[in-house]
Image 1 (cartoon, helix red, strand yellow):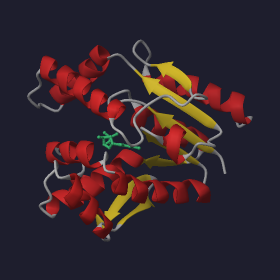
Image 2: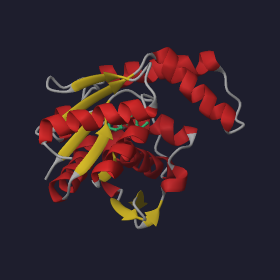
Image 3: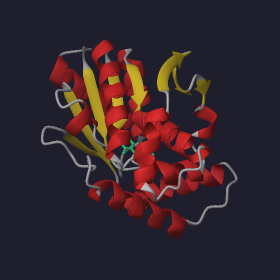
Length: 223
Ligand code: DC
């Protein structure tokens, strides 16, 4: 199987890019953040406090998370229910950021991710894909952009949706999330030694996609 790992901080454009690259290559796209979000939804629904790592560790074993593909889209199932519509709320984001630091949560989801990658060609994005989940991936990309640029992208996205957006607040949230992702004890976000760094601050989505496809062709000989 050919495995492509894309890691990087929140808002670097990983999912947009990973989707495009996977389509070009006819690979399956695996969004691991959505799995951490589904776990967070499960914990939230069960009234587990986000700050209680012990309760999270004890409860996470009860979550039945699986992945299906419907019309080429990844659908995350929680106990058989399609929970995609509930994964992007601020409660779930906040819970995911905390619960993803709990080792028991990671062990379960990493296993599921490794099974998916062993069974098919995948483009998988997350924080620890190149370092922990798929250390032998043929291609590893570390996608990043400045806090300023990521905050601007998010700001414009929210404005477009007619949501209330405060640029300074968004930038502060991103910086805080980076800090938490990079300094947590288990599987912190970091660039794998053999990953190619792609800074998207001054690149368009198409330019980033083409750059990654070039790297994939170089490393794998795929077309
Ligand atoms: O990429 P995202 O925002 O959907 O990720 C949701 C949360 O899960 C975020 O707090 C980071 C965490 N995460 C992780 O710890 N490891 C991954 N492989 C993917 C996401």
